[in-house]
Image 1 (spheres, rainbow, N blue to C red):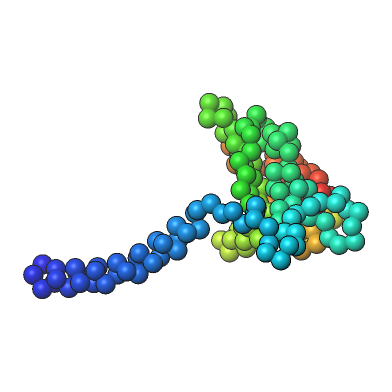
Image 2 (image 1 turned 120 degrees about the vertical axis):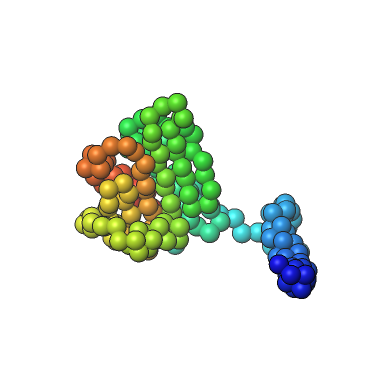
Length: 190
């Protein structure tokens, strides 16, 4: 490159540094700890908390151990024994994030993983599966609507989606019954 081309590159890079600094600052600001949950509001009112009433209230229940947004904890929708039965192997303790729960087989055992998505994440997963052309077969009689494919099932109850995804090295035909049964169970818990 000529000297003038290198100068143009350096000037462009220097011009981007302030924008990069702003983006990094904003990004990292969300990573810090927050005392909002422990600080009471200035007006003396109580902060909102998520509670599950077991269906005795007049409104919609968050279902099993919902979060502040009322989204059921996916690890409460599918228990470890149920995930192990589906995977056909022992699985470790669940790893949970909002709207996602993963049960994974130990690295020294057979391959197996069960992943549960709930809420918008589950709906987005279904949309992606449709978008890439996967064949989704309707499952009548489960929730408002439900679909199954080789290694996954999608359930909609009261406009709330849950998807259960299985990673297993087996004949997909073996999964249909267990996935369908687990979908019925989960639909009853929402």
